[in-house]
Length: 371
Ligand SMILES: Cc1ncc(COP(=O)(O)O)c(C=O)c1O
Image (cartoon, rainbow, N blue to C red; front, side, top):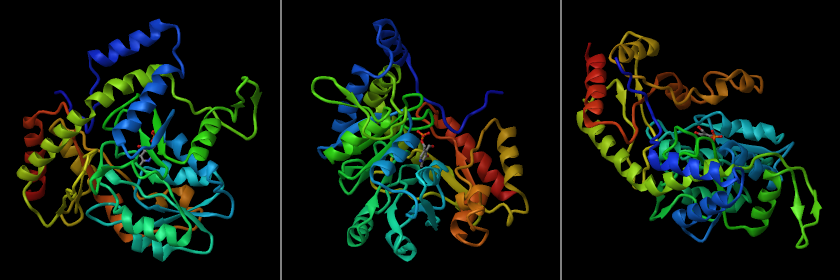
């Protein structure tokens, strides 16, 4: 039986040819392909921003926090539901992640929950556009302006997402994207920061490559610490092809999601994700009330597995990982995130899926919910 994964990157001949071209060119690490990718990504998101490529979104997020001077004694507000990188980068720069609960239907944080978590030490907030659905940014930016906070958008899952008529990334504030293989477009591993602050962009370039700065005569200095966070040209070459296919990928994702909505039967035991203008449908995550069904999530996953379907888990609530429990977090702190963390299942969604695959997943889940 072939297994239907919850995601699969759409790599074709054009990506393979692009990699071959770079490998044969004699220049395989950061170079002209990265520059071209930065240029094309900036044009894609619009708003006159510039892009700087990184070897992951994790590196990009960490670099922005460093450059913004966030460090020991500072608090950074993050949603309790995200991939753990969102909180880990805060710890990495020596600051404290402060979790807030999310909405059950969007899985996003909102300005009210952020306002309630503010203290005299709050310096930044990292909203996550969960599964490609934009956080309502306008109230959040208003709140951040009022309190002088950095807003660092974690758009790891949101390349191609729209918000109020423009693309996520176009705001001019730092916005980080991921091009990990699960994402809507991939560079294998990779990420990027969109931003329009030229001073911040210059420092991001330094921090991503050993802190090195060169003057106009090429003289090298190291004015600050930097890491090794650059993206190779081989990866950028894959990204250039993927970016050209991104809108088609996202259109196909949306079509498949409409089929999910059509075929899944309504049930009090099932919470479906909400649609929204500009949603890029990185994932289709549901909550299944397994306790009410008299079963466990593992047993539900096993039933999917018997039907050749791999259902994923995105994500456990971050505050319940041992690392964050050691900071004082525990069960009961964020009830919605905890419900999502224990009930969530990611149904397969990727552009090469067939309509019959969606119907098979829906039939399987409908049966689970009624037996
Ligand atoms: C919300 C979120 N933030 C950050 C990351 C980290 O991205 P990367 O794997 O490119 O470092 C991911 C990756 O899954 C993510 O989903």
